[in-house]
Image (cartoon, rainbow, N blue to C red; front, side):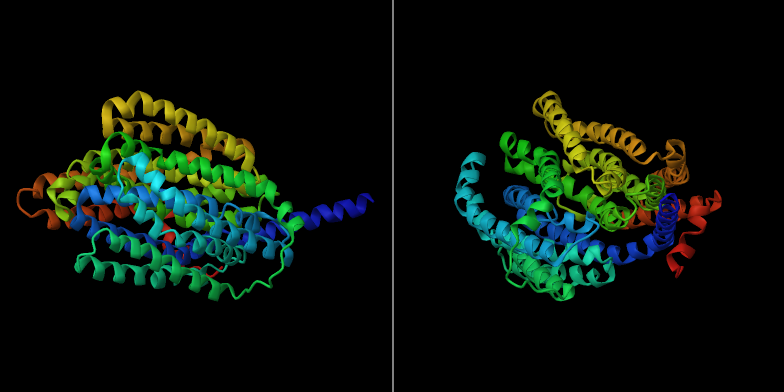
Length: 501
């Protein structure tokens, strides 16, 4: 018996070694390229659509659409991946589990769409804006689409077939973008953004269903669905709490400061959320299915996260520091003067965005360990703290106070999630933090170079050219510093991206 047990341990250790080798940093980076193609296309096209249409219709109309989209984000939290993440995290999945998850999510989507119709007038009354109701009703079919999209996407991600998702955003968001631009030019105003949402989700559903190459058989097994509910319900709780945490600011601004202020706030958030979602979203989407395979070996899991943080630091840190530096010129160059109050908000949110982006990695590792309930408890605690800070800072000091509250919460969140990550994985805290020294130093040099360029050139060239010059200066100075300091991670980054094994 002892011999058999020893052989099992050797086999298990060997299997873990194979998994760790298979999902080495070079493989993660290659996978990131496929996820990036999808994620960046989506973020860029959404962002361009928002800026283009928003600059035409103004802050107040954007505020009205923000209320409608915030409601849809709530439905997104319910329908997108809250249940289907169990399809990724669970070691063994049978066809009955897949059938149950598909019909469960599709049913939730249908119910959400029908419930939206009577809820829309109530929300319009609460915010004191009657025109919000038809906007929410018009985008309600998105609920049904999201329920089914979530299942197909999870199935593709479980099989690590990220390359097959690469064309999704090019097709879906690209089509929606073209339609929205045409409608905006023809004077449809805020309704061009409504059509954008409908076209985007409709085309996306067709695409992922085709790529997944899976069709439901029409059977439903409640016992198999119940098997997945422990993880799924905790994960759903995490996503709902996270939704209210991320959107509480929008709700507070809409209720207390009006639609014009909400439009300004939304612009600032979108300028930061675009790089946040494009950067950390890549690694987050990629890492959960990979880390779930390492959940039995804490040390391997901790090392995988540490190496990913190391690679991500060379993307996230210059992105958010750069946004903080160029925010005044960016708004001046791309938008009308009425959007100028968004500049200080963008700068504060950029700092908060960097903290949040790094937090994602540690939170994903804890979810991969199956600790969805722990994640829920922590998020609830932070939500309570958030409400308290809003009362102290946001309501008396306006949008600037709200932004400062967000930055403080993001910093605290990074500390808490890192401590939990260290406890769950037994990772070396000094080693993980040490991996960020090189990109942080390069970012400092970048900041000095960009500011020097701005001071020398701002009186000689127009804002659009100044913006381009600041971006180019930042990219060159960051890359050169990272290379010249001899960072093996920076020097070897190109080789890792090209490596086959």
